[in-house]
Image (spheres, rainbow, N blue to C red):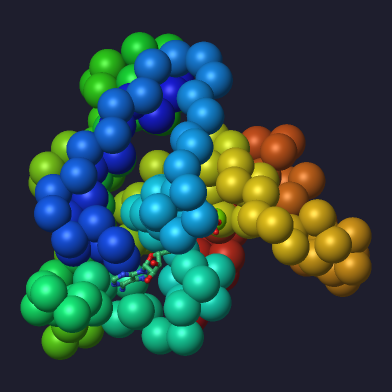
Length: 180
Ligand code: ATP
Ligand code: MG
């Protein structure tokens, strides 16, 4: 499995529809300070279910919507779609290509979709669990993450190992089954 493309519209500095295509193997993104490199990884993190504005480098979730410039009005919606090559079926869906979309309106309403079909956030988290891109997985290492892992409580660190061992899915199901 690998990330084939990121298409953003209204997300942070990407006011216009911006499509980035990646191949298998290593991709490096280079550019001047403030040109939007980190905004790309923020976009990936956001689509994969991030609920904390702080981890998206904002103070509230609305901060991810294009806020306008001196020459351009702010937008009312942000949308990002990730497309994964799933020929190895690492994502447990019977498709060779899987797209995940997240949309947020300034009103606070949000939508999620898998292969263009609307779904719940939970469906996305279920799909990603144990793939290495689930909650708490180390698929994106931020600049301050290393210190945070080393200083985290043992219980929090355990979730990292559970995800890596591929048992996070079962923990999620158990929690669901025992909830009243
Ligand atoms: P560096 O090399 O310094 O790490 P970078 O290429 O990673 O830079 P980013 O942090 O991705 O840069 O981009 C920062 C830019 O994104 C800033 O110019 C900031 O104004 C802009 N930006 C962030 N959020 C929004 C938003 N909601 N609307 C418009 N622009 C935004
Ligand atoms: Mg950066």
